[in-house]
Amino acid sequence: MKQLDVVALTQDHPELNLHKGQVGTIVEVYEPTVFEVEFIDLDGQTYAVETLNASQLMQLYYAPLPQTA
Image (cartoon, rainbow, N blue to C red; front, side, top):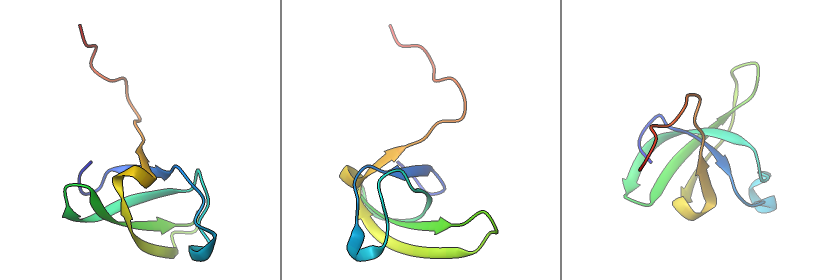
């Protein structure tokens, strides 16, 4: 995953008021598996910015992926 990739949470984080399936954008890469993710509502307002591990995220794709052999 890299900066500006769109991701979804793979688990609930009730202590952060974030829940599985919520969508965010990677805004900073701290380490290969540690990211700052910004969560924005439908009105364009940021409601959370959190540092998360790759294991807590799933990258989303909006186009077909290249086929692999």
